[in-house]
Length: 194
Image 1 (spheres, rainbow, N blue to C red):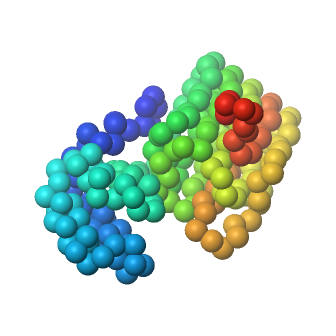
Image 2: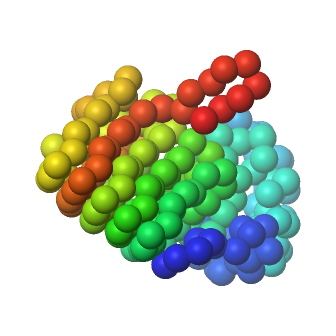
């Protein structure tokens, strides 16, 4: 996959399986005491009648788990040749992402990305360019399977093993040739984020 990874989630029509997933979130919320039985019944009725993800959003907006969105794909691919490759903001992250770059830098910012999976695997094939991965808060990373050729790798402030909680864990594999690999969290200064 190249270019934008997904249409605006709110305009995508829901399947029966999507509605059942959202209803499952509501069942979990009522079991945790976040919703009363009356609220649960009203919200489930609305979810079952919804056609798009935008119509479902009001029923889950005040619950943990983020906005309702289409299911994330299992596999995805990003490619570039002699150009930079960047992703930031709200973009859908597949479970397995292949990144191929020749003579161009790669910066993938996962801070605000839609990540449905707790474990994300990224396979790098980068030649003559640097790679920067900006992970969401609390995420961990494993870069032990990255083959570095004429370059260096740095993990800055990110744990290298999952803590056993529900946070995301990124497993990076592949080759980084003639360029560096940096994994970090988002930086903040006053109103700027990068």
